[in-house]
Amino acid sequence: MSAPPLDRPTAPDEAALQALFDATIAADHRIEPRDWMPEGYRRTLIRQIAQHAHSEIIGMQPEGDWLLAAPSLRRKAILLAKVQDEAGHGMYLYSAAETLGADRADLTDKLIEGRQKYSSIFNYPTLTYADVGVIGWLVDGAAICNQVPLCRSSYGPYARAMIRVCKEESFHQRQGYELLLTMMRGTDEQRAMVQDAVDRWWWPSLMMFGPPDDDSPNSAQSMAWGIKRHSNDELRRRYVDMSVPQAEVLGVTLPDPELSYDAEAGHYRFGAIDWAEFKRVISGNGPANAERIARRRAARDDNAWVTEAATAYAAKRTGERASQEGPATEERNEPGVEQ
Ligand code: BYC
Image (cartoon, rainbow, N blue to C red; front, top):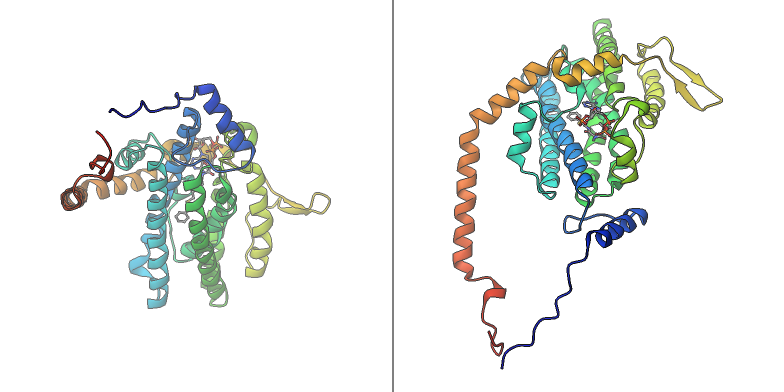
């Protein structure tokens, strides 16, 4: 006797899938890798997550430059841990991009060939050790403002990666602020170094949030999809509100003569951002773009043999496990079931 034909459901049509996707987004539930998603949603996520991952990996360079010149063993240990954390963040993010069908090596190639971006902020040089503190305070501070809402991003793997990333970013921000507080209690020369670093990093840190809302081509759709939760300008304003009181406690001046508190609005007003500089930097012509990409390219090429060896070893282990386990369960002949 042969088995009765399986009552297979017919594949739902695209309109039904789209309706289910829309309902999931409207209910503020998560989209998971197994779920159907519109191609534009998938592409937008890959673009943003890849750019984010690249930023973490390229972001290791400016601070990594100070590892051999850290002023004490304690500072070296802290900095080493932080730079390693950034590598970890890159790995979670590349893994999240892989759940969307992206290939990690391909993403790295796109970064090196200038077909995908990374954060503008990492195209500025770190000139003194105070820059390490200012990156922790301002750059990680901006990252926290931007990334805490991403813990509620509509795409499950991205949102979950962000939870861990944000916990580590708060440690990063505090270590930077603590380093700066220590320097501000030091000599006049140390205080001058901190002020100089703040003068150089303040404006680029405001640019991390992206172009103004009316010049941000991706924001509207990304917000409708729940990929982004707040607009670029909204997060930038939040960051300024958070940073000004911290600058006062630290005893530094933010390099913006127009910075003033608007009691009626309940926010700080700030001066005009140099968007021409931002555009220059994101199109590859910032102070350190060429150096950052050259080093990333060298890391890929010089370490290709490690990747090849690890890939070959993983393939061998997978083959060994498969031959030990025998055929997969569904391929086994179940007793009593006619084939
Ligand atoms: N730099 O339509 P828009 C870290 C691009 S790492 C470069 O507003 P979107 C850390 C944008 O990609 C922190 N490019 O875009 C690591 C788009 O170009 P494409 C990194 C920028 O995506 C180590 C075009 O401009 N954080 O914290 O809606 C050590 C138009 O922009 C930038 C993230 O990546 C920029 N600043 O919004 C220490 C967070 N801004 O792609 C610290 C995740 C914009 O169409 N990303 N562009 O060619 C996001 O939240 C969003 O992607 C952005 C931009 C808010 C950045």
